[in-house]
Amino acid sequence: EAQVTQNPRYLITVTGKKLTVTCSQNMNHEYMSWYRQDPGLGLRQIYYSMNVEVTDKGDVPEGYKVSRKEKRNFPLILESPSPNQTSLYFCASSFQGRQGVYEQFFGPGTRLTVL
Amino acid sequence: KNEVEQSPQNLTAQEGEFITINCSYSVGISALHWLQQHPGGGIVSLFMLSSGKKKHGRLIATINIQEKHSSLHITASHPRDSAVYICAVTRTGNQFYFGTGTSLTVIP
Image (cartoon, rainbow over all chains, first blue to last red; front, side):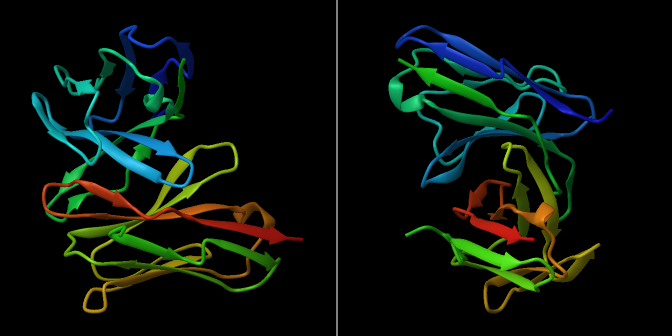
């Protein structure tokens, strides 16, 4: 089954404790991306990757790191989480074409609370 | 000011009604996407458009590049269409910008 998986689905942590949210896709997609969703602000892009070892900042990259060592995986790293990073996080993947990114497949979301 | 504006923010319709959700953007784009977010939180991509019109079942999406405007239409609406509909645009470099969504409730 074609899918994007994220782990963990729920996480409560404390300020400053490093964490990683994993994202994996089984569709051989070139493009992968991380988003956060906050009430009143909607979805905002954190980082994206157009292929292995190619990553770019989105709209709100501060406080986050990513890596793309393998095509299928795109982990999101919070080196020192702070309460303002409490949010719902989505990973997504897609093929790319001449017109850009095609329809994205989204993971189920990770609800992160930083105390 | 957000680069992507959607209207209305909230919409309630009776089952069977024809529904239109609008999206306007202020920047040059390479493509426009419509997404659906279910009440449980999952997000599904409905359409990607760079010109013209696309249809999938009861859903129709149109885009007017000159006017920087797109519409999502739902024909013969059904309670299962109740969801948040999100417009997003990509610019060169494949960075996404999102509207804040339109919350649709279809009443039986």
